[in-house]
Length: 80
Image 1 (cartoon, rainbow, N blue to C red):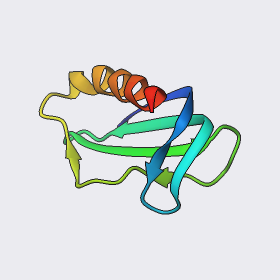
Image 2: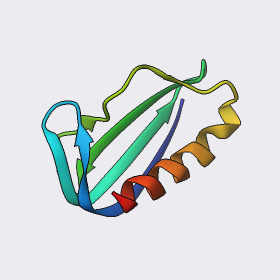
Image 3: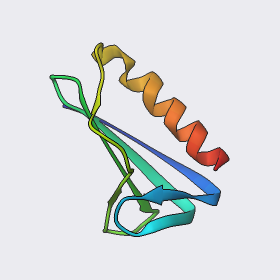
Image 4: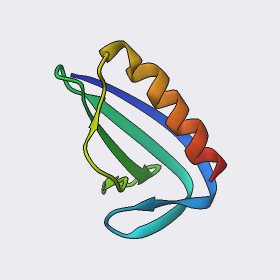
């Protein structure tokens, strides 16, 4: 299992499955299991409660793509 984490600022907000839109200084965590299952979670920086990003199951066909997908998601969410 591999975990990646990035801090970014979302001015316009990011949709979560549990509480709707959150904005401000956020942390994205992506976890890739050995079978390619990708789990995405987001929180306010320094908070304990994590939220999930909406959508179906995420799966990587090549585990080496985890770094690229994580960086891409961080960049897109920061533009939100």
